[in-house]
Image 1 (tube, rainbow, N blue to C red):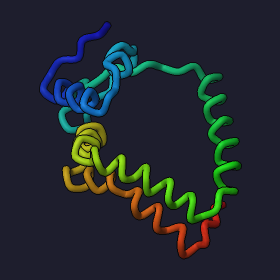
Image 2: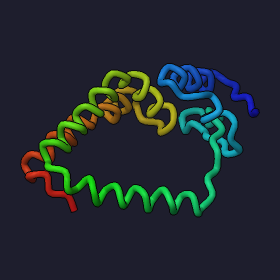
Image 3: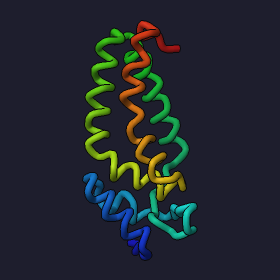
Length: 130
């Protein structure tokens, strides 16, 4: 186990724990994650083999083919429910976005809140996806 040290790293560990992530998901890997704010290592994530990445991409493509057949109002409703869950954690998610990507805090929170817009944008397009 690689121990993550430093102020931002401790904050990230606290935020991720508050979101229900197991420490092994962000501290036992061999790939360091650095914050662009300070250059500090904030986590160590696991590498994934290319064949597993390909499998996950293929699975996501298959799921999208099914998802696009769901009527727009139902998709929008599901996205809205997912968004409600995200909004419940928007402060923690926004702070994580700020630390990991280097966005200012307001922009980080806004990024965590974008799902409501996505659920509403399907209405004028009658749910068509390409």
